Image (cartoon, rainbow, N blue to C red; front, top):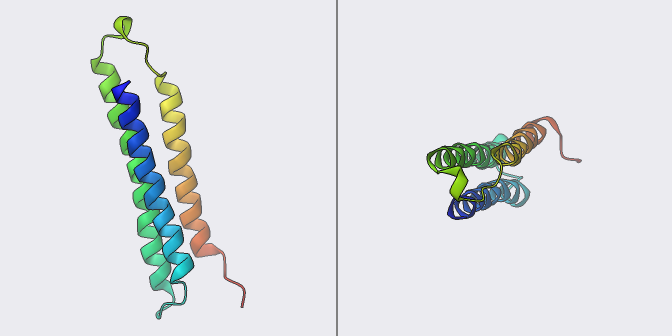
Length: 104
């Protein structure tokens, strides 16, 4: 269960980084030059994607070192699916941040 809790902790950190990126862009979208807020927000969002993939790698590495007949483990494909879904969502969000224009 410790591996799952650690994975969940890293995923919370990834969501936190993504949330900081969204909040930064929402609060400081009127920076001068205008691309600066997008750039800083993108860095945090991409950091969230990297954290999600890194969490998956660490969890799968930890599971591979455990003796599976003695533990009840979360299936690794599900962990991969969760991590890569979060990373893909973060990448799409970062792309949308640059492609979509604010009204006005």
